[in-house]
Image 1 (cartoon, helix red, strand yellow):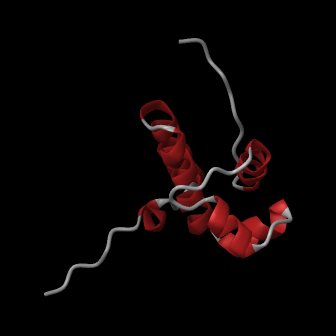
Image 2 (cartoon, rainbow, N blue to C red):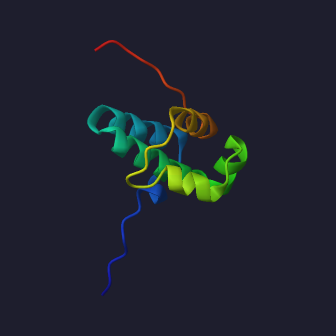
Length: 92
């Protein structure tokens, strides 16, 4: 019996699930975790679609949203808009 590798992108199948996942990572993770989570979301939606909506190439997106990447804030904002998200700040 072989086990398949877990891929969170397979479970991000609704806007609500995507929002819950990203909000959890924003609350509990660090900046690297957030970049990786946005990459998972982009993969779940489709990198080609996100590339088209952001005006970036697929390879550039994969590189910007990979482990250890330090994408520019502008890239993060473009991808968030393409995945249907937005940034909000609330007092803690």
